[in-house]
Length: 425
Image (cartoon, rainbow, N blue to C red):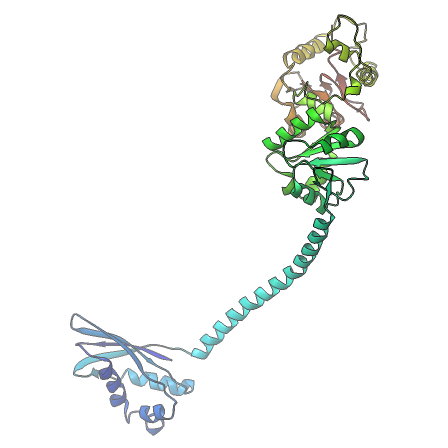
């Protein structure tokens, strides 16, 4: 394709330009390159001319398609520049470029072929995984059963499992099925069904709720109407159905006993009490709260907290025995801090000199301790758990002070533990 630019000092039209091309090149290049003969033989295509006139001058673009070889086409293009008149006007023609259209088409073919091949490869990659996911999802959906009189969505093992997981909706049950957990059942809203309440009396019940306000509401009702043994939460701001398998397993591994959760988040009085735990007869004149505190289930965990600090009193710099009435200044400071934090669910992180480094909510204590390198002691209004003691040992802390001890299976030897009862004057 020969592309040339024409400029004329006057107004000319397309027939004038075509006539000038044929007329002024005739006999110039010999019989072999005569334009008329070449066009009759199909070696030269139809000459295209686009002319525009403005202010008494004309400009235009000339396109001549050619099937000649490169040498002959170049000669023909050079011959166009010898044209000096178009119609009655002086004119100049300048060849801008001689383009091999086949190369251009070939490049377009290559680019389009690349795009088509990339699309084919992408489709072939996803088709196999999509097929597997589709089959797996159909199997998981078929595994969902309707349980109880309310026909609640549940996993296939819900009838036989000794432990069950309570989630919010059907999609949460599906998400747990994808992770291989088949003993989940959905409450389908904040109104906890009777089926779940009855199951909680016979099975070990773990409440696995979303990390938003809806999860808080469902959890509060579950604690009031069912015997919840453990509580697991999705990360703050996320729902159970959005979690990956790794996040689900981590959340379930980090579940905490319901009574500890109630103590840590100030939900006292909302924990469900079955009728069997309330004594039928109370001593005359004794208020109901005292009768409950004097019931048999409460004193059972107390020997364990008292036994653990006794191990540390042998190595503590200032021994404190149950008969001690006067505390050393350090323990007196811890006692005052614990009294100040009472009922606030707050923790204070202390440095080597027992100065306050920072103050955080108890719910953020675990994550804060992991990054608090200057912390050497912690005083908080909450239950001392195994996880807190493990982190304290890793951070080389010397003291942990809390309201009471939780279930501790392994006591770090380098960390001294004090509870409210130990610091009582």
